[in-house]
Amino acid sequence: MTNNQQTFYKYKSLNNFEFLLDLILRERLYAALHYELNDPMEGVVKIDGTIPKDKEQEWDDLIKTFRIVCFSREKDHPLMWSHYADGARGCVIEFQLIDDQQIHKVSYVKKPLITEKHITRKNAEEILIYKEKPWKYEAESRCLLDVDDKFLPIHIKSVTFGSRAEKSKVDMLIHILSLCKPDLAIQVMGEQGLIDGIKVVSRNRRVYMGDRVRSEDYCPQCAEVKMTQQDYVSRHCG
Image (spheres, rainbow, N blue to C red):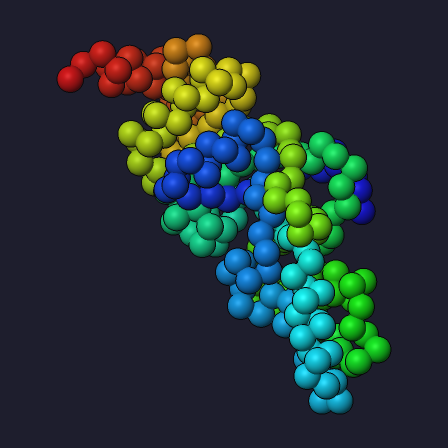
């Protein structure tokens, strides 16, 4: 599949600023080798018992000819926030691919059995789009690159910070992005979630914030004024 107008999501921690900024500012995703991924079963297959040792090594060598870029089709999944965005202390990056890159939808069914005749690069590529059922919540898609291609170019549409993200880190990132990418949409999750239409003007940036708490006398305009006042006070007092 090569429909690059699809939107995908990458959940990231705010730790290791240099890697996060490289991703956002240079708009590229790192392509990992299979053993760098967090699933220890990546590239591992069931063997029928008839494959000689030298052929097993051949399979391992084939798997190492690929780099893997992983991302999700889920834009707001609690387990993804927890496992990949530091317990909602990180962010999620919304993006589209910009090259005519083949996209593989990960399958969570049982991996096929490998025999000696199946030890080919094509079958190695196929195995790398299988994962075990416990990972199904990730709703993962992948791009497989050659071993020499360390990055996949993307077009970033927005960055959303988690509800537990450290304010000083968020402020620093927003400041950097406001200078380097002034047109990038930035959002911050409140404790109860994200609401469109409640805006805080941060210098020349709009940061969307809010929660889902609604009372009978809720007024969006009043909420916007209140949050703007709070933002002004936090920036100019103390």
